[in-house]
Length: 427
Image (tube, rainbow, N blue to C red; front, top):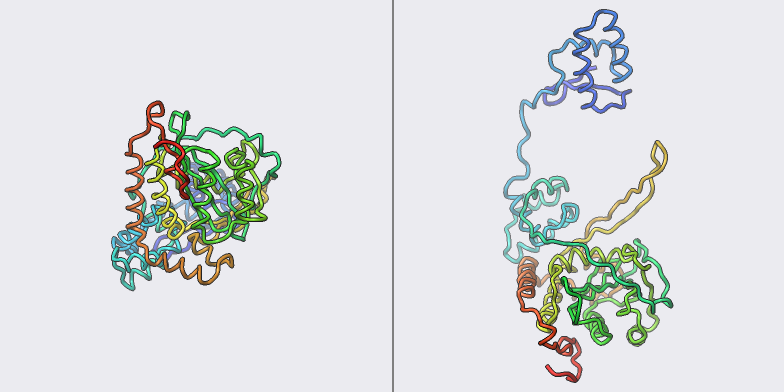
């Protein structure tokens, strides 16, 4: 049967057919030519076939075959524009402050960030704009921000790491994706070697909490026990919640007797686990952040001087505030297998509302109310847009710094330490 839409166009009603509206119309357009050229008996057979295929009534099909046009007519009156240039401008400022995250992560976080930026003079909001930011859909955000200029980085594949023969006493496992308690960290070391991995070079020690997405990074020169222990000490001094478990890969820079002894002194009863050799997805949370946080700014060129490492630590101090306080993170809420009609199954994932690591941390009991209040006050005092500019300026400054010449210039690793040690080597 034919029904009339609100816009005055005619539509086809079909209940028994599995064909989509578009497929049904295309099929009838093809059959209309055959129907016009057919005789009486052939038309009867064609109508029988169209009834079986579309589920439409016979009278409806006869009427459609006699009509001049099966295609939908355009709307007589188009809908007005709901989200104009004012919304697009506000979205562009908020998206820039969030470092151009996807529409799914922006959705649900536009209003509070817009109010946060308005308090710092970055934009102006009206009650009408606030209402639009609160009800705008994910697809509309994606459409309005389509083509927005972003910074592009070349991200080639990193080289695989060699297995560590000293890691046999540490059990192999994967941290569960639905871990709800903060303090279970995946740990990794990102090497800034460029095309030359000889000599001493800078590394970024990265820790990511599975439950909240909280990220901590420290830069070191080389991979000795001294600098790795110092990097962990730097991170522990600013981490607002306790460490319960460490889950590194099989590198000897993490799994050695000296570092295990130090961690036993710092955190008695700490749980250790490690990923399987050559299975990078066992450290999936930190590996993903290595790409989206560290490599996105530092790239893949060689960094190997004291000045570069010290500037990198200054950069990571600002980056941790920007990421943990202002970057919403999507967290997997559920996953299960759906059976398919032809056999087999497919995995279906659903995600919780995107929230910043700080908000996820404050929703748990891992920190006291005083610490929570202090962290929220610290975020309230920061301007994310200005902080992002400072981060990019520091990243550019690091990449412009001169590189060391290993044969002529010896670097003093003690000058990079968080806790200064006695000078035992020449500067």
